[in-house]
Amino acid sequence: MKFAKEIYIVSLMFSLAFFLRGSNNIVITSLPLYVKDYFSFNPSEIGILAATISTSMFISSGIINPYFPKCRKWIVRISSIAYGIILPLISFSTSISVWLYSAIVGLAAGMIFPNVITMSSEINDRKTKERAISLYTVALSLSLIVGPYIESVILRYYPIKEVFLFFSPFGIAVAVLSFFLKFPHSSRGTVSLSVVKSLPFILAIINNTSYDVPFAAITTFAGVLEISKGISTEMVALSFSLYFLTSFFSRMLMVVRPVNRVLIPISISLIIAFIGLLGISFSSSLFQFLLWMAILGIPHGFTYPVSLTILSRGFPDQRISAANSLFFSLMSIVAVITPLLVGYVASLVGISKSFLSLEPLVVFSLAAIAILSKRSNLGDEIYQGR
Image 1 (cartoon, rainbow, N blue to C red):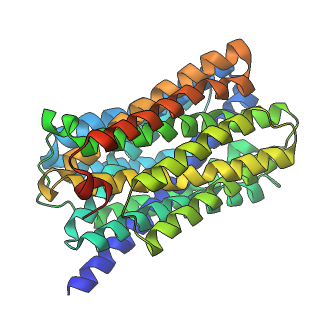
Image 2 (tube, rainbow, N blue to C red):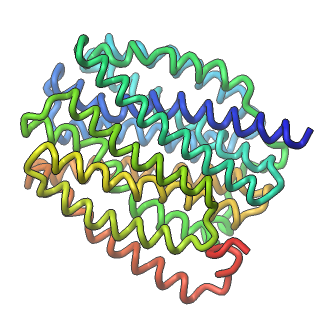
């Protein structure tokens, strides 16, 4: 019975993550190209549109989800139905309605994602729970490989505005599967100051921010950058598949060999991110662009599952829902600010050089995590998983 329950939880987490992230990523990466081609949006407007999605995700994950626990189940189900309806409608949007559709997509995703992650708290064994979290992130990466590949095939025969219509089955799957989502009774749904001030939460935030910022910039502007250099939209879609392919293998490694000392993958990720951002800024050919996209996929693969593992080790089941919701909402804020700042910098110095402006954050994060690891007296519990 215990094994069957764990299989059910892991299977549902995997399926929801795959269909939701697969379709949500298409919106995030293809919408900038869509509005640029059809509505002539400039980099600043594209950044604001991306920020609209992230702001909506913050509202639902950081305010609605934790502070309305009694009606959370129905809000999630309604959100998933709205997501399934809106996704294909993006193909028929205007320069005005695209803002509304983007906001609804963000609200829905922000409600669903934290509750999928929190399902892992129903698994009691620590290693099994961490494997479930890693498999959840594997599903995210797998969807980010399959999604762009499907998109690249679609773009051979149809314009980019029709891509969202072809991904409507993903939205329908999200709507159906959400009705099977479990909502752990142990979740309190409140956010306390102790959560924000705790070491595992601070560490998870610093770790994730160190790569969430470059990731938000890459997904929003990397495609626009390469199209400006003459690369086709089909090849841009394939480049994202390559990016997420290396991310997928990084996360599969964490499933096969669960992390004990989290500082090792954190340090590796930050060093690779620093080098990769330099590379993509100065790439001058399709081969170089694909190479650096593949390299940057490695830290993308490690960062998120390591952050979730830190939270899982650092909080009891009674507080993990609040920690997950607050973590997800703060990451949404990062996704709001980044496109705005990078879009503004890009309008001044160009998209290529705007990626270089992210390097100081990577250096700061590496230094901050090193200091925390030395000063903390919770090393065995959080850093080494003992």
